[in-house]
Amino acid sequence: MLDLPGGIRVAIGDPQDDATFTLTQTAGADRRAVTVASVDEAVAELTERCARWPHAAAICDDVLRAAAATASVFAGVITESLAYSTLQSGPEFARWLGERGPARLPVLPDPVRAERDGDTLRIRFNRSARHNAFTTDARAALLEALEVARLDESVSEVVLAGNGKSFCSGGDLAEFGTFADPAGAHLARTRHSPALVLAELTERLGTHCRAEVHGQVLGSGLEMAAYCGHIRCHPDATIGLPELALGLIPGAGGTVSITRRIGRWRTAYLVLSGATIGADTALAWGLVDEISADVPAGSPTR
Image 1: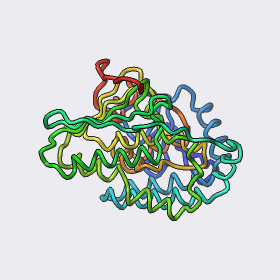
Image 2 (image 1 turned 180 degrees about the vertical axis):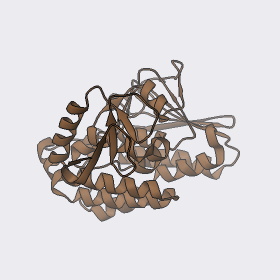
Image 3 (image 1 turned 135 degrees about the vertical axis):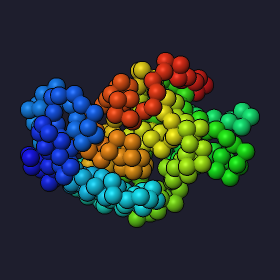
Image 4 (image 1 turned 180 degrees about the horizontal axis):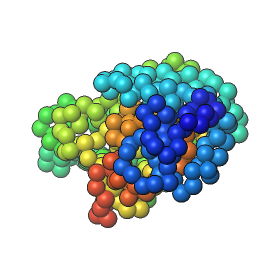
């Protein structure tokens, strides 16, 4: 067992339960293990990343271990959000904000579009000029659309997709740091959470609460899609969790939704390594349920 900065424990070869994850060069289906081309190179890169963001790495490991043990989506989302707010107050996120510098968030109308087709509600992210990067406005619009399905039991199918070249590229980096109060940000995330509504809809609709993903499927985009009962994925998809490079962890419920699909070990690897995976690996891991070139990309914003 290798001890990396931040208390991260990486096993080599045979999968071990108590490791953060296991690295191997042998293909296998065990959710505790990740197959890499070179264990030595992977360890070197992970060591460098965990040394640069030790607080975020340690808290990621803590939250994922807690999420794996909880049976409640709500409890998991609360735990994740409290940890996220802790990191928002920390030096690693402050360093990233300083390196990014001032940013201006473009105002794009209709960040989410919804239409009813019989008993089906189709919801599309609609900030295609930004690869559907997620914002506070988009969250409010998404919640408004999801509430229709939650309150109207005649809606028997919900389809979540994205216009333009990507499903959703994660949180819009220009908006990060605009909440001065981490406690208020925690309340906003948890009292107005698309994750919780998607989990409720999936409990009711099963595979008829579906995400259709393509292009960039990153960060909060992946986290929300993972709550759906079925994910149909275009072969071009690029899938990952890039939050560590901001000194943060997933903050849209992904420590619950993704862990439930692929286990805490592979979830930890995606966060700590910053690696992206393609549709084939995502299917083999159970992160998506189907690969189809017929996944529609919709029309770009005009």
